[in-house]
Image (tube, rainbow, N blue to C red):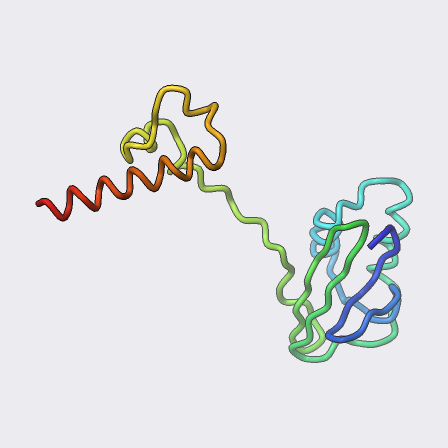
Length: 137
């Protein structure tokens, strides 16, 4: 992908400036954050996202902007951006607390040192034990 900004439409790849993205200041900041535009030279790219472009996006069209390995997908309705992905999702860690893992029967001494494969085996064994208990009852 390199450091050159690209706008991708289905089946095509365009240089920045082909599409007018119609982003509000808030949406532009959101896109800049997701593309990780933080360096001084990135300011020029951010400004181009705001002002450059000739062609209006079609109704229902999705554009993907890639820059230095990061991407943003923008969905349009009536030429206006309505959805910018990836969406920031709040992390839900309540099921991974020590208390929750103990309640599930997964917590063990040295749990923090387990590898991913060890944890998967542990989860499967606990699940199998619970199925066995349900079958016995």
